[in-house]
Length: 495
Image (cartoon, rainbow, N blue to C red; front, side):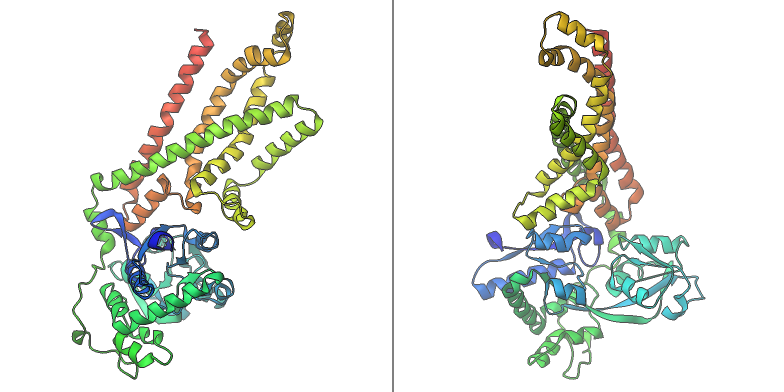
């Protein structure tokens, strides 16, 4: 809670109703969990006698747990399901939402009436979700996992899937509003969402549990769920303990857990369930272009800094390999083979999350620059080596005839010629680095590709936003080719 901010990690790429971009302002993140975080910060601040606000930290969904352990935020709030595996690793708060899985098929589908009819069919879902685990437990042979919750429904429309099984909150916004799809069978597989905290932050977790209880009893949580069309009879399961009657009343149920008539509850302004269509309609070029341009600026910064590091590292490595004593040259060769042989994503994960376990912490941008610099340094070393060895032995002999020392000959004669030869491959690596920066979203850096995915999945403007994103990448990469060819012509002509 540094600086009076209660930071929570989530992924806006996941979309409505959890965290998504505002149809009226694509720079703003909204969602029922965003409103829940604001309410929790307010309630917790009142108990602590301080002004406390919630702060959203954009993170890849798959990296939320490592990000929590690295202390990039105070807790996870992103449809985080309660599972035995997670209970063993993190402190899980009391549930704030009871969910179930809902099966969805195409509107013209008549074969499938229930989940049992899908056993030998191709069913899509979110990778790592409760729905996927439910299907695996049922030994279903044809499960298609996706990284986002938009793509399964798109593939279902196109006939690539027979059905989709996902959490009911997702269905409400991505399937129930689509006339080409329909819900079949009753919801199945009851589960709960909870806040995830570090085990050592159990005191904060208990305080958040108390704050959640206050939101239940006051009706604040009920109204948030109603506003986002998520309130249903299952939410009575959230009430528990000695204060269960009060929590049931606050949630909108009678003492027996039966839902009250919503007309008797306080009036609220509900969110348009067609939030995706509203984003597609309202977002204009002048609204989303600045966001993509800002993300492109981060891409340029990361690429330029990383390439500068790679150029320097590669030069030291190639000098050690070609002219160092055997132990040094062997280490240089090992460096090249090591960093060329392992995935770049693994390097980023190790530097950002792995080193933090040893007390070595770097911010995400620094980690990206160091990681790219180390990996691309190995490639630049090989480019330099090939270029240097292409220079004929006569150049060395001519330098010696002029009484030049080997270091001076290398600096004045060999390296300038080798650099001209290496310029083309170096430019190719620079362009490749522009594209590889898309990997840094896993360590919470918002670059161009990540911004595109968040905006596209919030509006389904995959083509329109994709064309602009491609144009930005080309605008960054093509000038490098022209510069490379200009320098080759200029240096090659001797002018």
